[in-house]
Length: 202
Image 1 (cartoon, rainbow, N blue to C red):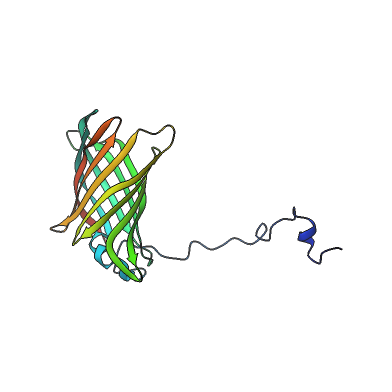
Image 2: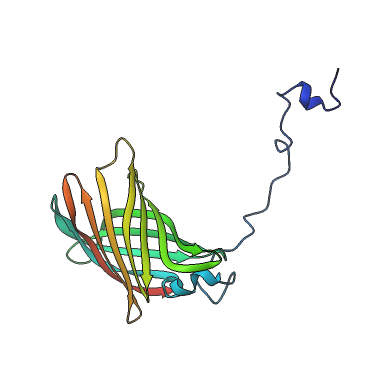
């Protein structure tokens, strides 16, 4: 019996989207500025002070490397759904605060944990680096402070041996401050990065 649908007889028929016309640009807005763009999801009300573009400088180090100065830009935005988009770019500074080279980058998501239909103060954060490390953090918000601890770290075969992390964020007098500890290459959790960033947009 021959099917009325030719694609049933010939699975190699081109899919219907193959010759479809081009689509328009992504139609949904994402914003780091609460004055424009989609309405903030109510689950994010407690994280509202973090939304924006932040820029500043910090200090880094670890038992296996020399201390260094860096500058950093963090963009935290939303698209109306109950999560925040997080993107960080950093660059090394010399003694005269001149850029030397690109440094760490991260992208990821901050997600409030729900109890039924209600967002709690608990958070999940997923962060990924181009150096092959993916971290799942669990934590909680206390006022304008966020504390995160790794629940799992996944690495590619060629990535540095990072095994755990601890991060503390806070909005203090309008600035974004954070401190980060890392366990890696045989060392337990040790101070790694700290910085103070000011809002430049949003």
